[in-house]
Image 1 (cartoon, rainbow, N blue to C red):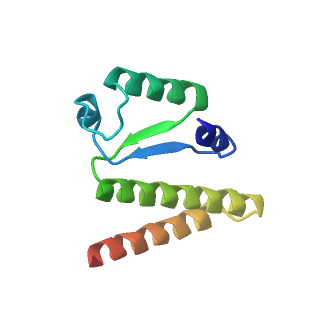
Image 2 (image 1 turned 135 degrees about the vertical axis):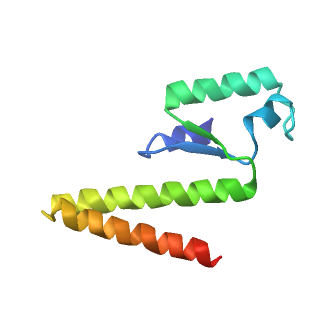
Length: 110
């Protein structure tokens, strides 16, 4: 829980899990913690720490989710910064659209 407490300083907190919720419910994980305790602990973290629990199904799914969240976070920071400096919303939206297009091109090239 010490690491969770450190997370309180961040605006967005998430626990990215490289499995499905169904796999966890079946006890398919390395820890010896009982399934009921696992889900109770996650519920506590969701409510008390405002922690988002993201069931991603696989390492690749987790990587995609982290990339997507990072992109959204960066776009939000850009918008906040631009608005603080008086940049119009149209300019912000155009930049965000161009950024999304670049990401789509990179994904298509993979």
